Image 1 (cartoon, rainbow, N blue to C red):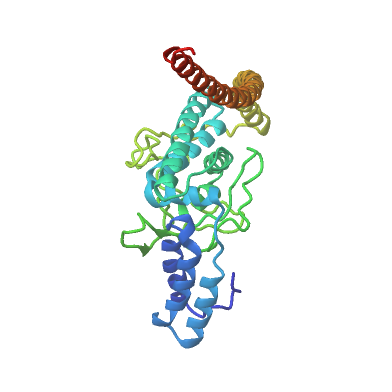
Image 2: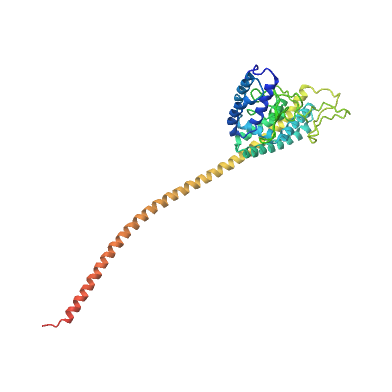
Amino acid sequence: MAGPDSYDSCMGTRELEGIAGPLYALPYGDFVAARTAAAKDVGTVDLTAAEQRALAADVRALPKPSVAAWAVNMLAAHSPEILRELAGLGTSMQAAQDALDAADLRRLAQERRQLLAGAVKTAQALAAEQGRAISAAVATEVEQTLRAATADRGAAAAVQSGWLLRALSADGVDVVDLAGAVAVPGSHAPAVTGTGAARKTATVRGAEPGATVRGTEAAATVRGTEPASRTAPDGTGGGKSPEQPRLRAVGKARGTPTPSAVERARAGLEAAEEAAAEADGEARRAAAELAEATAETTRFADEARDLKRRLDAAETGLKGARKRAELAAALAQQTARAADRERRKEVLARERVLRLGNTPEE
């Protein structure tokens, strides 16, 4: 990317955002050509000549995303409500963990598994519609990225920006590393609703004004995902967005002593143990499927080898039969000619006998 001195005003940055937004919502194979064309079209932008040159350089420097990041960008462009729901769920899980509510953590973890599975299927369908089917390995990276968005606010903002460049991952302990993860870090993401819709510069999709994606900072506050400790004006402890009425941040009431670090760690351990147990179960199911598939592969391989042996034997027999048929045909032709000669001799002998019989003896 270009250096910090590329622009002398906010106008250039807004123009870069307006160009980058549609580019990252394009089909995967169209990105490079569209980026080149966009850099050439910078001359029509209402900027000074120096700013136009700097903007063109920054447009040309926009990186092409990985396939997994592109698939997530397709969600941001075409199904942003899925990403908002995941971000809201992540905030609810954090609130439940802070409140040491193990039951709510289990419920929210189950809900997250369902949402992630549905989101990955939607990403696969969108990618296919855009002409790029994604492999199982890429789908796994998409799921890891969306899971990271539920664990870290900065990751949620990066995912919702639609400018993601690489897959993200979260270990549940450290903040998600966002260095080099977003095409235009430190700025507001464009509200892109599709490749054919009008696009305009706005804040991160579903984020409060001022939310940005900066390096590794968790700087975005997602609408509908306010911390549970924020109370409503009536003191009832609101904080849920009308956009996501079913995602309620589960937290402690005002005035409740802050849980100790040990208690929070224990709650996190319980959630981690449950997640690990579920992962073990999935691993066992996958191992069973692998064993079944391996056995089936072995069976078909044995059957294929047996069929090949039988085919080889049949081909050998066919060659022998053809050779015998050729010999038999030659012999039949030869014997037919011999038989014809003998019949002619027979006719001549009969005619001679008749002549002799009709001739009087002297």
